[in-house]
Image (cartoon, rainbow, N blue to C red):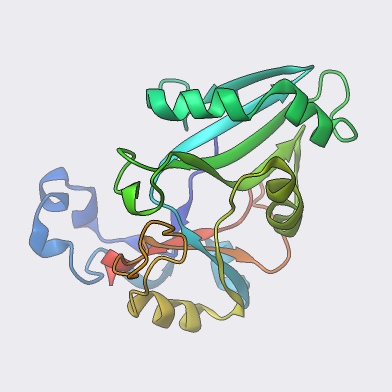
Length: 229
């Protein structure tokens, strides 16, 4: 089963970051001591000048598989456990008829569709402020070997499936504009259960304005977390 690609940080890490004892030291969790600023984690990042930015959701990674009328569910890896209340929601919501109606024209016999998203809600990470109920936030769709464009995912598929997608925070932003935005530690735009906007967003996911892939076929994107600044 296809796993979701690892999302790299913008820059490489300092050596101490890979020492488990140092990672547990709270004095090293403030600021960006772990980053080697300017040394990109992937060389492709330095060649892209403008990015679209969406909020990073603090939940649990979920995959919804649809093929030949059957639906299956998985976490980020084959061994990941899905919380019972979230699994109940997924099984109730993502029925074969729902997915068949949406993907009948895209997925022929033997073609697998994978919905990649984040499960959120009570008792899932710190996500109780996102919503009073569990839910699914869709951020990528793969049909066979094809990754669908982010605008199709956000404005078409998510709406038709009746699920949420990550808030778009910035468009055609430069690297420096993104860094300054994350440093501001803005409230979460996704937090539906936080009317006073007290909870800082976890961070951002940045993608090229036009979908681009690494040489291995994974989408190019990077993450930055507010706590790292």
